[in-house]
Image (cartoon, rainbow, N blue to C red; front, side, top):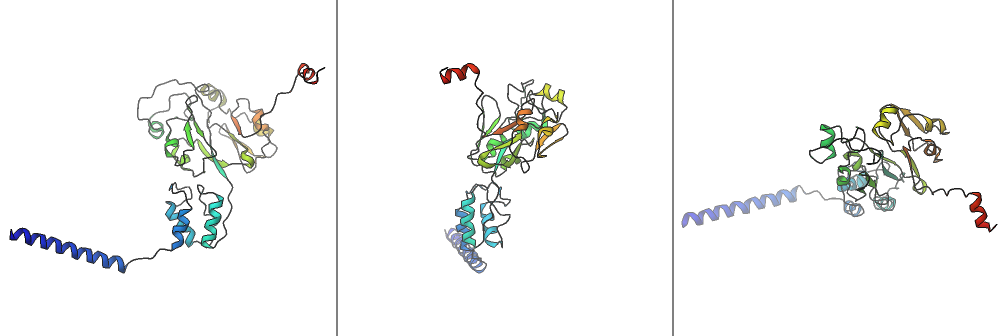
Length: 288
């Protein structure tokens, strides 16, 4: 009985001593955090997506408080209004950034790119890409296992059940870039959102020659260069049988969209053109 009591006293005393030492060390080496860090962090989404280039929202808040300028510091998930408030908190002028949005550089739907083989393995894009060329003849196209969907912290991506391609909700997309990193075939790109959401891009990453690319996918870019010849602003380049549109030079004229023979160039949020009325329809509308 005495040995049990002694053990309890020794262990209890040791615990109290260790607690006292830890308390002293914590008080001695305590670093008081700038209260503005908490205020800045409250304005951030808390997704820790890394789109700002920092390791997380707390790290970004610390960077803002210790910075001498907010140039280069921007949280894509917070928005311009939040960045303006952050600027007021830290006493610096916020720098407006060009709104960006993610786009998919693939139009290899089930209709355009039929399945030619069966994959029986781990259901992730990263693993399949490392061990298998794909279930279609196009080794450049979307694998469609949804690594990008799983990675998105804002619910901006979903797999379309018909096309089997990821669909990006531009209203939810913050352009954090985590989906870009998640895609093993680099098929998601951040581009300027454009005025009123208008934008044009090449929805293809196939670098095979024209005939081979068309055999693999009916909507593939064949590198014909017609879009480049049509563009008056030198916004389009063609390298390795693949066209690319520089959004900084593009003037959204859409001539490239109309001239592309495979419809590999996509556009977003442009008004739909109404078909011209026939002579008979004109007569009916005027009552003639």
